[in-house]
Length: 393
Ligand code: NAD
Image (cartoon, rainbow, N blue to C red; front, top):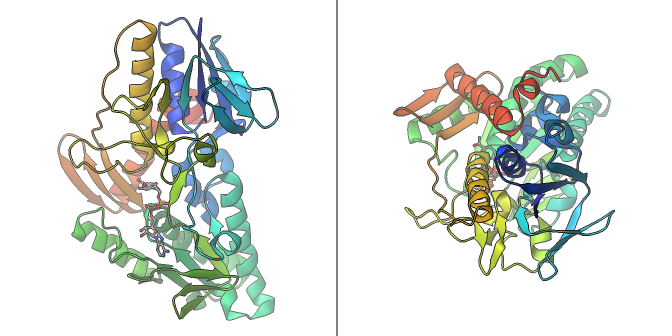
């Protein structure tokens, strides 16, 4: 019987295992993940702002596959893929060999080598980092009552991509409650968001983007565009000679793929491997690369697709179908992606959305928030089951 080893239980890894386990193929599946749980990485900003708890966005990986006899879940950290030996090296146990490999190891925070970013910025890449960012924010705001240090009430959010904007939405929603709880003056809080590019929310139609920006500005966020961050000091973010002082610095300037990619000798850029149209690694017909460690050219624009949960899930479907075809002696098909649209939350109760289902819909306000909730419930359902989604497990 052939053995398929899947690395990572993020959106892509969970989905590919679920598809393979339900398929009518005689195959052994091994899913390797660092943590015993899956987390919805698109909701880490909510943990960091304190509007959700880890239990709201995580579920147990082994439980999802408990009834699938052909799935084995291994909790360990992948350190390297030995492509010649066709085996996966692990931190705490013996290497695991494979006939087919699906690499879905996901993302890490990108610092672009900026001095002090790693040491002084709080990144949001997993449950631990999001919880650490939350604790720091709460401790710093709480401290103001005794320190009277203005910088304790200053927060800088680095970058204005999706993660930053969604974090800012949750932050401005939670701050009034924190002000009451910790007794600091809400009107004295200063939030700067510093973006290297010329636009905020440039992926949306200008009217929607403008609505989103104005909403956050009305809650006190100050945006600084065309302002590249050049250094992060312990208590200030620098853009050349301009300093933005703050005792809380959130580092959300983008992501790259897992360091295991470089450590395993793949040809890569920012730990992402440009894969073939059927999502296999060039020259490695037994290896699929999906999710944030892969880079797939969009045949229409010629540019690489962005790294999103929606694309990861679509890639997983394609990789699973291609594996099933190969196991049955068939041929693989090309990855084709049809976007369902984009939603950006601005806190739990509002947001903006461009939905491409049964027409093109531009939404703002609570309707966008509702569509975000529906997408996140649907994604839980796509990765786990109805009991997990309803939290009845
Ligand atoms: P991102 O790459 O989308 O945004 C990072 C931002 O930081 C960019 O605007 C960039 O110009 C800015 N930046 C980078 N270096 C900088 C510097 N030195 N100084 C100032 N600004 C700098 O990264 P992200 O927000 O972490 O998102 C990662 C991926 O996940 C993206 O593909 C994103 O689309 C996706 N995502 C999607 C959603 C959603 O669909 N709702 C939510 C979260 C993340």
